[in-house]
Length: 115
Length: 111
Image 1 (cartoon, each protein chain N blue to C red):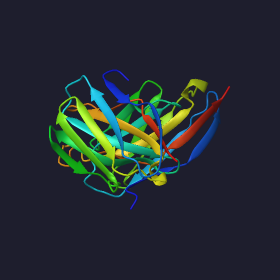
Image 2: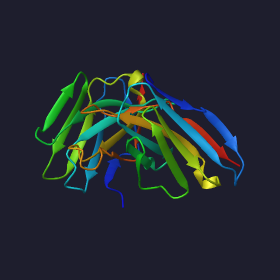
Image 3: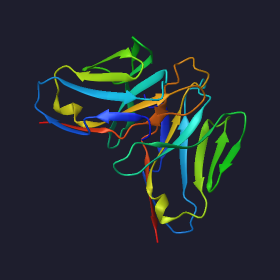
């Protein structure tokens, strides 16, 4: 059972474009939704996270949009740069600690930003 | 990644042999996790720990065991390695409201 579904699997955009990565979840107990960025040969690194009490969160060029009723959230990267080329993972957990903060990850999106 | 060291970074082992991967943290974080990363599957939780000697299974725990005898070390053991356990293994820690911090991973090949 895949609790967090992520799409697309891969995405290619031109520099300056706005890639959008989407995730959908099933478990209504999830209340913490982070995005991780991973470069080849490295471990994933936390990029940005949101809780369901807000519909949008921005940090620099990265924005999470959250739709609680649809159980969907997405990552937008404004003015994308070749250095943003990486694999992006969405994730979800019961953030209050009831599940020991276990994260369930999507399968990842390989983003390529062409110069 | 600062504060988390995984060892070894690379390992090739034969089918049927036992293998132990080590995760060492210097941040005194309470929670530690082992994930495996495979193409098309993302990151899947193997086992996790919520304190010294307190561990529990994740979604893909079959064939794996863990131990945590002190806060800083979380060991993952493959009792008898199989080719299906060829993967990249990541350790992660969490403390309080902060997100996960991942190690740099161990690439394990079972031949």
